[in-house]
Image (cartoon, rainbow, N blue to C red; front, top):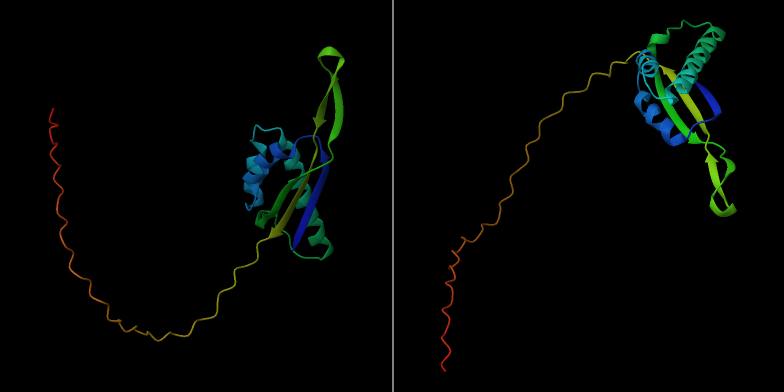
Length: 159
C-alpha cells in the first residue's frame, strides 16, 4: 500500500530543497528520518514534517483496513519538490528605480510504500548448453615492415 503527503507553498526555493530530498529518495523511513533530523539544511525541517505526515497517513490507512502496521518496513518510494507560486516584490534601487525581488515557494510530495515480502522466483528449467560453432576467420596478410625515412640532406645553394 502506498500513501502520500503533500505540503504546498513552502517558503523556500525548490532548488535548495531538492538538495535535501535527493538524500532520502529510495531509503527506508527510519534511515530517512535520521538523515533529516541531523541535517543542517533549513529545508530538512520542512521535509521531515512531510515525511512524518506520510507515515501517519500510512498508519491511518492500515488502521482503516484493519491490517498490521510497522513503520520500520516503509520506504520512501517517491519524493519530489516542485516549484510553487513566486511572490513578486520590489525594492528601491539607484536613481529612483525599483528592482524586482522574487520570493520563491515550492511544493513537497513524499510517498511511502510498505516493503512487500520477497517472493521466491519459480525454479527455472535446466537449460541445455549449446556450443556455437566457430566460424573460420579470414587470415590476415603478414604485416610488412615500414621503411624508416631518412632525413633528406640539404643542398647548398651555389652563389
